[in-house]
Image (cartoon, rainbow, N blue to C red; front, side):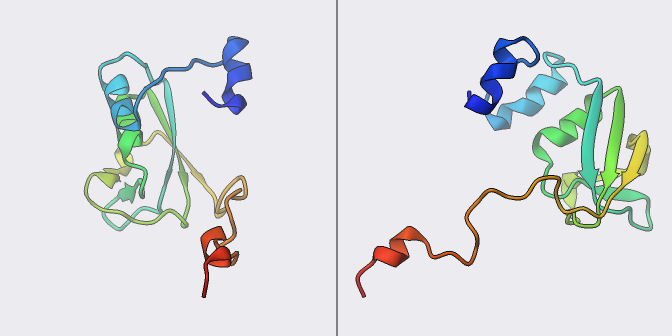
Length: 123
């Protein structure tokens, strides 16, 4: 558990379940972790009334299938992925529109910066 989660978990405001990412969907589907509200991001709907979860299909699809209420943020920056990522609009209870790319800036290294190995490599 990271330091950013430890304080709220120890104070009782959050739960921590050590689990592999690939197993998270099983927790929703078997009912071990009930999902009252699933808050997801989707691409704009197509002419057939389907939206895409983009690249977030793993636990998101299971949450959508098991949730009591599904709220979807329609974001044109979410890529349209096919297969299991496509879900009908009828599975979503509430839609919210946005054009924001992210609520937080990425803290990763800039693409323009030189990787440490390249900077120190002999030429």
